[in-house]
Image 1 (tube, helix red, strand yellow):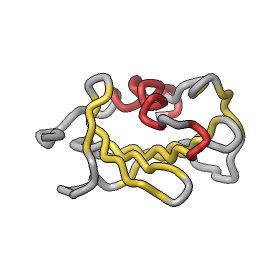
Image 2 (tube, helix red, strand yellow):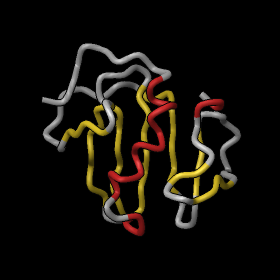
Image 3 (cartoon, helix red, strand yellow):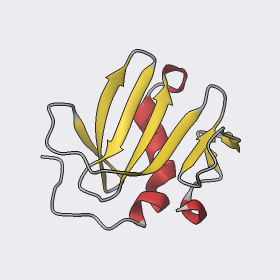
Image 4 (cartoon, helix red, strand yellow):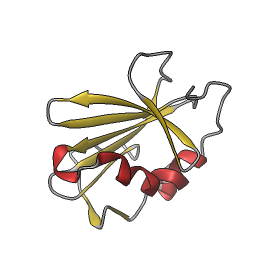
Length: 109
């Protein structure tokens, strides 16, 4: 996965994290955080959107939005702080990383 993470997200450069795992990356301040290797999520009532051919489930947090790929295993999670509104505009930056994981049978309806 490490080879597929974007160099910048929303014009923000990559920054260091406290994680020693290559599956966690961060960009900007406040940090946009990406994690790979999560279990796939099942059906949910949270909004599901398709961005550049990738299905994402959006879960509103108190300080931003958590986007999780839908229909891919393993899943990728992107935490986007409120400072980057509208948050979905950052998701295309992760297209190459997500495309490295084959899409399954589940898709946004």
